[in-house]
Every structure is written in C-alpha cells, then in structure tokens.
Length: 113
Length: 116
Image (cartoon, rainbow over all chains, first blue to last red):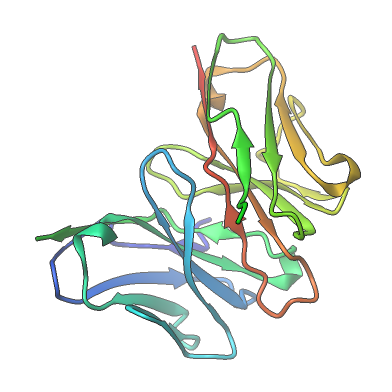
C-alpha cells in the first residue's frame, strides 16, 4: 500500500527553466510534508518542507505547494541549474505515527546545460 | 557544524555473518530513526528512538535485527545471520522530537551493506 506516490520516474529540464516535481498521498492523517534531494551513495539532504496548515512555502529557488483537498504537493525549482540534477524524494509524516517518514519512490531530475 | 554521522560507510560481508552499524545523531536531537533503502525505492522506516526508548519497530525489522540507543546518544543497528536480501543502504536520521511544530529529520550519509 503506497501511501506516497511520485508518478514520474524521471524529468529532464533545460538549464534556466522551471522544474516541477509532483507527489500524491492517500493518508489524510499526514500533516507535514518534506522534499529531500539525494545524490548516489549519499544520504538524503533536506530541501524544504510544508506544514498542512499552509499551502505554500518558499526558500530561494525552491517552492513547495500543497493542495490538501487533492492530496497533492509539488516542488518548483526556478531557475533550474545543472547542480540540481539528483533524485528528489517526497516524504510525509504525522505526529500520530511518531513522525516517521513515508517516502515516495523518487523522481530523477536531469538539468541539461 | 556536525551533522549525522554513520560508520562504516560500506560493509561487505558473507551470508550468515553478523554486522553492526553505528549512528551518531546531531547532538541536541532527541529522536533517532533508522531507515533502509533498496535500489529504485525510497527509504523505508525500520525503527525509532525517543532518547533511549525504542518506541516503534516496523514489520520489516525481523528478529535478526536489533537496535539500541544506550544513554540516548549514539545508536547501533545489528543484523545477525545476514542474508542476501539484507543488502541495502541503511540510513540514520535524527530530529529534535515532539514539542516542535515541524519536526524535520536530517539524514546521515548511510551505510551500504553488501551480503555475498
């Protein structure tokens, strides 16, 4: 039972353009959502998060949008840079479940220069 | 700034051997989590500690797996009688814990286990 889904295994974007990564979830108890970036042979690096009481959070080039009614969130990267090429994981948690993270399968982002 | 550290980074072992991994969390963090990641998948939750108390274990954690966090500081994850299916990246994460409105987990670099 995949509670968090990232339906696009990969995404290719031209440098300078916008990258949009999507994530869907099924469990309405989730109240905190995070995006992590991962390079091969390294641990996930925290990028940005959003609480369920908000619908948008921005940090520099990264913006996360949350649509609770659709159980959907997205990560926007503007402008995309070659160094952004990595695997991006969406994760969700709930204080009801000890804040353990439930991850999607990841999306490979390639930014072409 | 010391983040989460894990040791060793890589471990190659033969089937049937025991292995132990260590995780040192960020110093003021009360919660410590273990996850496992296999190729093409996101990390999967294994277990977590609040200080020295182990509060939850996933069904993924068979009785060959044991984790400890003595004194609420570093943690160890031991796998007994390793099997080839245990080959994975083992990730440790820490967070401040309950009472914070947004409890963000920060991950270590992981331990890559290969069972031959």
